[in-house]
Length: 344
Ligand SMILES: *Cc1c(COP(=O)(O)O)cnc(C)c1O
Image (cartoon, rainbow, N blue to C red; front, top):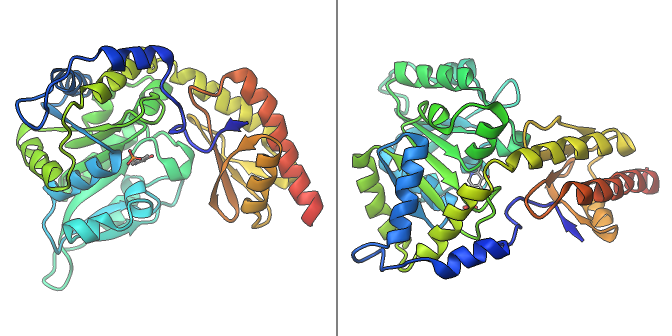
């Protein structure tokens, strides 16, 4: 069985487990954990920001970012298909008391003109905005990379509107590897950035929020309040450091595998594939039978996820080498064909 539901399904490699076993640790809630401190310093430097803070999940780091940037009763401008809108169970409303103003992108992801159109004229009758959120790569759009120029244009719209920018960069690693633009340049378009270690980098747990020291001091308190203070977190930070050292450059292999997979399945049973920029392959179906396709694919030995009733998602990763992708891609193609011929 090949599991292509997400790049989160990877298990720590033997070498990563050794790094975990050898990690020097302390109590991070008390005087600090040395390996966590090393991870935070490494990530802050990589992204060209003052400070980084290690979180148990990307969701908690995103929510802490929304918390420190906003005040209750304001709104955040964000792509309607963003993770913060779709997959964080209304945390911005429940935890931070902010309204989400979903921006519908005319293309694959929100661009500067889409954002500009959502900036309201100041009015006593209208909500005040407090934050712009970006996502790169964009998960829901299919791992789409927003170019540096497009990121800068988005940032400029936000600046003109007097709004800070938070970047959900769970897969910023993939955006950097795919575009050849440094992490720091991409991060320079945002005030705060979340990066995840449990996606393509293959670590079991964790994310960092990075940004200016004053905001991160506030985020530290929010993390504590949310129950995100971790003790000997060095065992997790060691895995993240190992992922950064050994699994960052190889993301290019995942991108190549995704392109191969897309070529194999495109057109099968009338499906159309969104040409992948990175490691996410979105497959659009001619009929609303995503659950049937996923069930048939599982019977044939490949697990994929149902995105919505007309769309399934396959994600390439560390535990899915190219040869396996080729073999299971053909099975997925067959699942698409079988589902169409059986049910149409
Ligand atoms: C996975 C993901 C998150 C959340 O990360 P978790 O560690 O799973 O909470 C946030 N944003 C995007 C774009 C993601 O893909």
